[in-house]
Image: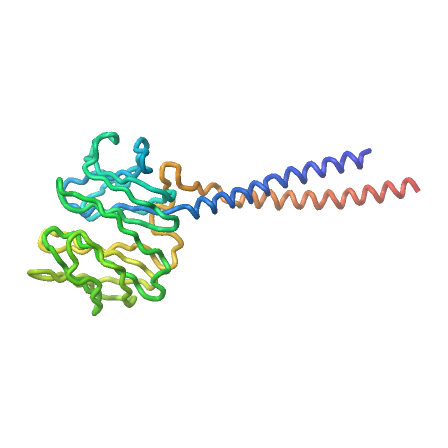
Length: 290
């Protein structure tokens, strides 16, 4: 009888430990599914003047917007990437302090695809602001070289030509447009902007495998250059924002598998010890009956 009760207890412990194992497997599968349906969005303020707030919300559901802009956000600022679920979204600009239900200064809609990153750029000035949505290149696309594109946001120059070293990456690029990505050699180089009436240069160091967006802006005396890293080397996801979610829509990383692994390891030792104990009890009972 004692052996039978111990056997029942052992089975119960085994089943109890099997539950967390199944939970771990299900949780891991769920997290992988959510991650596979995720994209990334960031915001660039390329419009001089009083900063306005930029909100993102699922298309047709403006009741729970999330602000893409950050504290200290202003002309030339680019926010971190924010993970969002794939689907259609609306992005809207409103003056600081305006209610989220108020009519936006400007808005547009776009589709977020899984595994893809985007930059929402606010350009122009005053009542002439507009939004441009750019699809960004992901890490790893550059190989051993560097991918560079240019976005022309200068209000003072209608067209600019941009070179990285001896490579021309944008020729007579008009206001409000972006060039395609071009591959250039990694290492130290010089970015040169040429426009009517002059040019400006900036030294840069470009890491192999990285992806960059170069924004042409207006400075206090001529053009201003902002070099922003879209992706660095072999990073699996875009830089920035990975730890902050989209209003609960991004996956919660949770505590990880370490606690469960410890529990399962301890449980396995207990079950193994119990099996050996039962075998010894059975042998002892057989000897006593003989």
